[in-house]
Length: 417
Image (cartoon, rainbow, N blue to C red; front, side, top):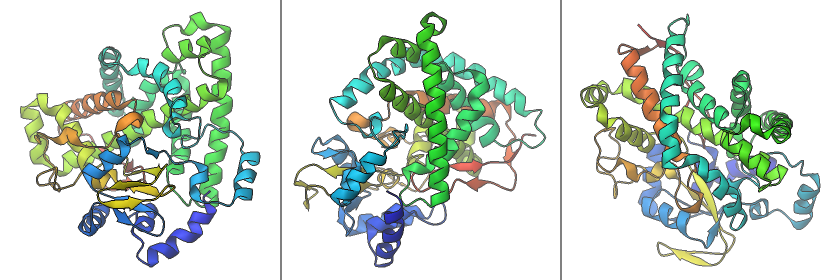
């Protein structure tokens, strides 16, 4: 799954294959936007040896909501039949977010069966009730950082808030938050193709550990359901609506997606606002703009750079014929800077009236189920940080994560002053 693309993609990228270049990443952080501009100049949808790719906002939305396109499955990589059968036989059935029965890559009716009961956790009313908890956690984290000799705004803040929130939603004990963070760091590269063996092996060990951890957790829940009656996943575990594998796979997805993307959102927002003090000044004068500022962070520095779909039948999109089985890589970060949709797309503007048109959380039936929670956490975290520490500044040593699908910072050392 990773070794073959690792060998093939660089060769195709050297020959100028656009999709191969996109899948391999973009080099220095920020350099991807020039690549997206060049891609759009070639057309709304560009064919390649590997498949097709687009950075066009309208095309991304069209494909994401078109039921003739499906999520990427193992069989879509074009492996020979005997190899596919071998992969099935050797499947360790780990809770990999990019493999079924994760709802991320499942299709109806299975996708509906997984998503419907979980969606109850993320209704507008539920998010409103969670806002006070987010404020309390944020205040506690900000106070704790005052005692840190060398605070890191990712390690000590941006990562802590979302992992605490999603951990309590799942009914996991607070003492295990560090484990959740370690697991997320190890599993995050799985969204990228062509991993090296050490990185892949580390992710598999992490997934094995998480499966054992969640299996034991849900067994305890079923043994004493009244003890966790206020946790939505405890109710779901006790109801029997999902099998053990389905429950664990989708809980693992929510753990990863529930804080990995939000960590990037908060970290990217901190860096952007400190780099644009004029925009931070606007927010201090007009705090009602914080939710819109979060949308602009999502648009300008998308925490998820891309996703992919496969044509399940012959289809025509933007005048381009796409054959059945063709994989299409959707550059969400590029769509978020499409000049046909966003005026001055390369300017960071917290007052932008159409910032919410970003597609950072996807679109259609697979749109991120926790998008409202992430947006709320982003607004609470960013406003709380700059209110508590108005003179905060970054120290030397800011470091990007080095992933091509998840885009954000691994470290943001700071002076709180």
